Length: 163
Figure 1 (tube, rainbow, N blue to C red):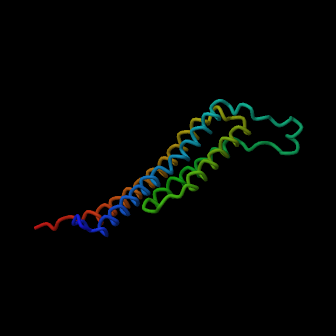
Figure 2: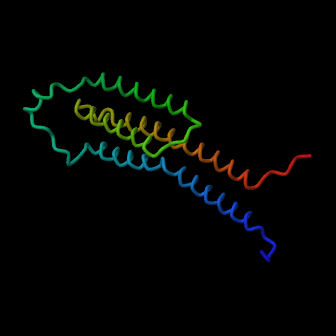
Figure 3: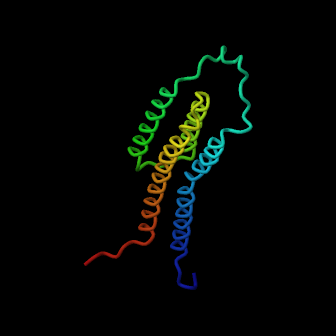
């Protein structure tokens, strides 16, 4: 205390800096589902190599695959509902698992298109639609974290009153 500094003010500054760093780290979390979806999409574009095909006698057990038009309709419904839901939740925090749920759904669409035998025709639609949904999730988290950082910085460095 002999140097004239207030130790409480130093602790407030370091606490604020730690919270800002936490918000920066949290803003990067939605990038992991993007990385996972990119890897899954690369695997889908190459036709899912190393995945064993079921034997032909399983067709009688499993039944016919869904028609591609049904899979298309389900994908469009999912895509619009995910985008609208993402836009309506724009001011809420993003959890890490929310993006991975989208990756699982999109992986399911890759699987259904593969089972229906039209994966080559629709892989780019799922890729573009999936990136749209996941980028919206990332942007939503980024906006939320940036707002929290701005509030933290304004609380730490109050503005001078305007005259």
